[in-house]
Length: 76
Image (tube, rainbow, N blue to C red; front, top):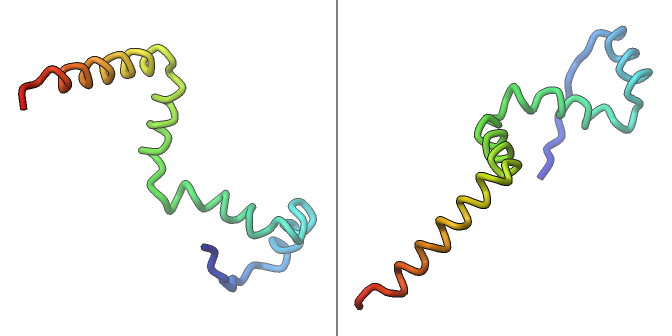
């Protein structure tokens, strides 16, 4: 969900933003700049890095599959 917000900028800054980014992309540009400063994305970045490590993912899958085999053999 998006929220509407009114901000005040120096006229020169606004003109530069308008010229470089364009009227229809200003909100997204500002959000992209602010996001890493206001949200804790360190954990997200870590998960992305782990998912990109195919060797680690293969080992994790093997380990996970072995655990499910252990549970099936367990007495109930």
